[in-house]
Image 1 (cartoon, protein in one colour):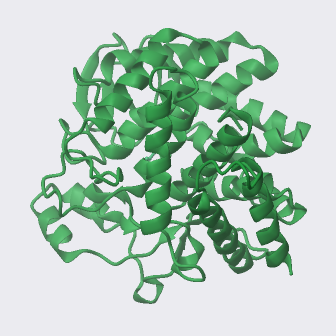
Image 2: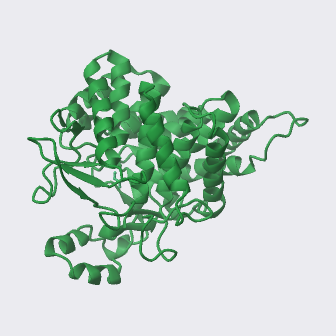
Image 3: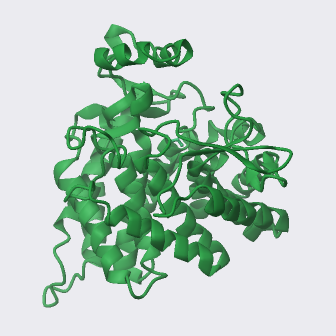
Length: 433
Ligand code: GLY
């Protein structure tokens, strides 16, 4: 019965934004209705499996790729050891992989998806599920050993606060923001990303870190403490200066000297090579600078977002369906895995970017629509299968042989976000949720 009611709600809402008057047929949004119906059903299955446990879904276990392991043997022993880290047992293969703990950088995405389900259905069933999974993460507000605070806390508590105005959530988010800025070094002008690989990098900053700035901008808007704004803008400007190449593709990792602020290394970690353009990194940059423009109104950030979009969509290796390979310079294209997560982050960012650039508005919306439509028609998980995930064919880290060509929770999170943004753009003229 619940399923049926949700289905009816989905249909009614979609009719609402697709122009419900039969005399005014606008566009055929059948794919969008389909996408949301399927997502509701898949997530129902996942929450039923998770039950009252503290489990947070992440992806699907795959085995080791022997060719990959053999190639790793040619490299230094520590890299090879790293490749064996996850050790899936035989019985686990093909089953749902959960976050190893709340410390996992992906722990906020599943709670975030549940908030999006609540936002879409307005059904308290989802609200209760979202609350429960979100509140598992509270202790992370003290965790100063990671830059992933925004991913974890803003996707979970951030959406929860937006939808419920729960003041307890506000306090948790503010504490999270204060904990995050402890990782900022004014000499470098950035928040430090990782603490691992200390023998290789002194002060690594990765392009992904642009995403964590949203929590800081929210904190500034919420309690008025200008330190949040200053840190976020400084980080975005330093990244703009050092992370980008002439063609506006970005490096993955920039390593800084903590005493002088000088750039020491320009590397990759998850991309094909130091000189290549790792696809999800380009998507994080696009989303990050679009969001920075929303929060600051500074034209330099809008300009950078447009330049990144231009790099992505003029790239000769981008397939016709607009779902990129895992790296724009992967050597075996077209026989390389795609990264659906890069596509969902890009689609979500484009809906927002379309609001800020009149000239390219239609082009951005058309591309985002094409991405979502193609994902829905050709990359979707099967209802009742695929461990309750929404989309197939994401790539976590091909370089480490980890989560290659599988469903991954952050692809699903940004897919839902993009679908909701699309719905809101059509209905209310804004993509902002
Ligand atoms: N932030 C980690 C990743 O994108 O894989």
